[in-house]
Amino acid sequence: MIKCSSHKKVYPTQEMAEDALIDARIHFDYAAHGGPIAVYKCEDCGNYHLTSKGTVNQKLAALISNGQLKRQKEANQWLDKLKKK
Image 1 (spheres, rainbow, N blue to C red):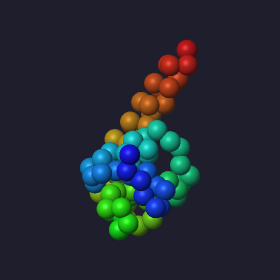
Image 2 (cartoon, rainbow, N blue to C red):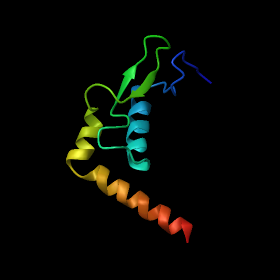
Image 3 (cartoon, rainbow, N blue to C red):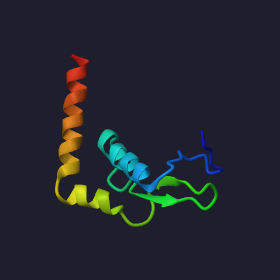
């Protein structure tokens, strides 16, 4: 397993990091201006990490603006409710 001195979770590619970013935004409830919003390439390990700083990732911004992120989040909440029954 790849490790980084930042102790952040490591993603070998930008695409994997963006998928993890979107997945996190779907599965977790973040405060209004909290949680990860972007990915960056780490200068220490050369891999990608999630960050709550900077400009919102383009893929994430597109999902937010077209309402798809909200629909995915609602679908996930319903799945969680159905699993509990």
